[in-house]
Amino acid sequence: MGGTPTTAKYTIYANIEIDGVVDKPDVIGAIFGQTEGLLGEDLDLRELQKSGRIGRIQVDMESKSGKSFGEVMIPSSLDRVETAIIAATIETIDKVGPCSARVEIKKIEDVREEKRRKIIDRARDILVHWETEGAFEIKELSEEIMKSVRVHAIGKYGPDNLPCGPDIDKSDTIIVTEGRADVVNMLRHGYKNVIGMDGASVPDTIKDLSKKKTVIAFVDGDRGGELILRELFQVADIDYVARAPPGKEVEDLTGKEIAKYLHAKIPAEQYLLMMGEKKRERAPEVEVHTKQPKVEERVISLPEPQTTEVVTPEKPEKPAPQIEIPEADLERLQSLVKELHGSLEGILTDENWEVKQKVAVRELAELLQNSEIKYFAVIFDGVITQRLLDISNSRGVSYLVGARIGNIAKRPQNIKIMVFDDLIK
Image 1 (tube, rainbow, N blue to C red):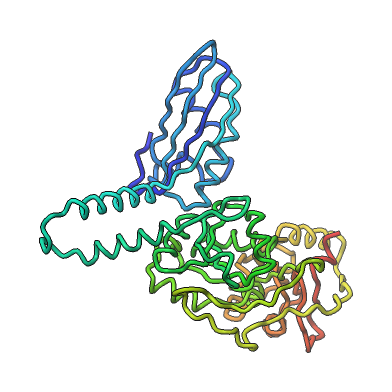
Image 2: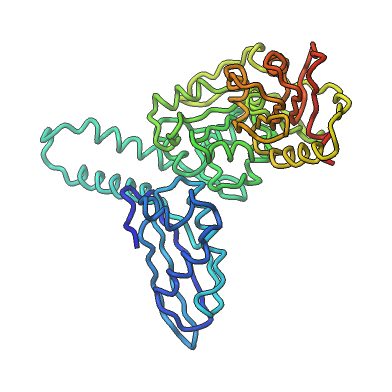
C-alpha cells in the first residue's frame, strides 16, 4: 500500500513481539487499524502514505515456539518531530489479530546523513587513488573533504551523550540546535560551540548548561521548531532565539544563511512577549554567572542587545474581576477560556458568546484593527497590552479577556478587562 517517499529523510526501525503465530499482512493491518484516528487527518498513516510522506511499511517476521518476532521498517519524509510522533504512535499497538503484541522503537536512522557519509568516504578513495593531476577541477570536491575533516571533531557531551562541537566547555556562549544533523552542518561551517538536543524532549544536560552559559536556541522554521522552543522556555534558561526561515531546517542552511539568521537573533524576553508567554524564572539557589554573548571561532559577532529591544512584561496587580453577566453566560465564558488556555490562540465572539473568528495571538491586533465586524468579546491566550486594549475599545468590544495583563496606563471605562485566573478556578 503506497510507495516509498520521493525523498525519505528518516527510517523508523521497531521490534515487534507477538504471543501467537501471525503473518506479515496481519502486522501491517494492525499498524493501520490501531493508529487510525489517534492523531487526526494530518498525521493519519493512510493519508501520509497516499501523499508519499510515509513510505511502504516493511515487516520481517519469523515464528518460534508459538510466538512471532520481527522488525518493522517505516520510511518517513516528515520532519524530525513528526517522525518521532509517528514512532511513538507505533509503540501503542498492543494486538495483532487476536494475539497480544509488544512494539518497541529500536532507532530512527537519518537516511541523508548515511548517504552523505558514503559520499565523503568514496570521495576520499577517489583522491587517494587519483594518479593524474589536473584531470578535472577538484576545488569544490577538496572543499567538501576539508569540511568533512571538521565534522570529525563532533563529540559527545554530558550524561545524555549529546552531539556537540569541541568548544562547548570553554565557550561562554553556546548554540543549542534540535539534533545531530544540525550540529554536523554547523561544524562544517566552523561553529564549534554548538550542541544538539538529539530528540524532541529537552535533556537535563541542556538544562544544566543553560544555568551557566549564554544560550542561543537555533531551531527549524516549522511548527516543530515552535514546539521545541516552548518546551525549552519551560525547563531551561534561554537568552536568545534564532530561527531558520519558514519551511527550512538548520541542517540544510548554507554558511552564509547560518550567519544571517544567527545575526537576526532576538532576546528571549522579546520573543516571549511576541508569543504572549512569560519567561521561566531561574531557581534562586543556582549561582548566576555573568554571561557575555560571544560565539567562538568563525561564529559571527553577536552584538549586545539594545536596551530598547528588550521588553520586560510588567506584573501589576490583577484587576478585580468585573463579572456582570448572567450565570449561564459566565459558564460559557469559563468554558471558552479553558479551551484556549495554553493554545497561543484567540477567539472573537458575538453577544451570545458564539465564536465568530479564531486567530493566532500574534495576528489578533491586525485582524481586529482591519475587521469591519463589531465583536462583543475578544478572548485570547496572551498578554493584554495597551495597544490591544485601545484597538478593542475603538472597535466597540465589550469584553477583553487575556491570560495576563501587561503595563496598562489608560483604561477605557466602556470595556471590561478580565484575566484567565479570574475565570479558571
